[in-house]
Length: 235
Ligand SMILES: Nc1ccn([C@@H]2O[C@H](COP(=O)(O)OP(=O)(O)OP(=O)(O)O)[C@@H](O)[C@H]2O)c(=O)n1
Ligand SMILES: C[C@](O)(CO)[C@H](O)COP(=O)(O)O
Image (tube, rainbow, N blue to C red; front, top):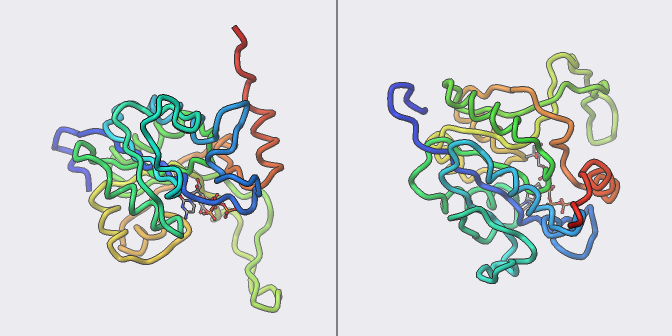
């Protein structure tokens, strides 16, 4: 856990962008689909570059898009010093690859979905502040507005959890770096990084998320993002 008495080092951010985007069905990997003329990944990185205390960034992309080096890499401007690495077949493997590529200068790590490309900076700041306050893991979340049912394989309801105890969680998810490394060392797959940390017995806190941190998953989500993002300024 981050030592409250040691001088804090910086914040590292792993941006996962290696998914195929099957549900979006755009014909190119989702993070490289344009939104107002620029890839979702570029929009996500605009905000990552403004995270206070930023010390390292790793961007995880599909193997076929590792051709970094051109001035405008698939229309994406990388934050200074960012490294680009290949992802894995599942999100967990992509996060592990990005985590391994982060430089030594960070003690707090944020894991962020490129697909949550409109996440406001304030969410990043809330997550970092909570990790720095001593929580091993911190996730942004929103209260659930629908009643949620658990079901069996036949679709029969097996229970109705108390809605007041549920949160729909988003990214960036923030962690003490050593805790996240240990959690990923298990090699287990999970739908988010906090679940891996929870399994190691560490405390994970939920802070307030933001509706703008929604994940672009379907064509309708992409249309919604286009409506929400102010159009680019024409000189
Ligand atoms: N093997 C994978 C799978 C997902 N991701 C990233 O994890 C985030 C959340 O995943 P999701 O929205 O499910 O993206 P896709 O896997 O691309 O979507 P789909 O399931 O529709 O193919 C995205 O930024 C995606 O690029 C990744 O880096 N590596
Ligand atoms: C990490 C995540 O965005 C938190 O809500 C989510 O679990 C990713 O799920 P996906 O199926 O990989 O999109």
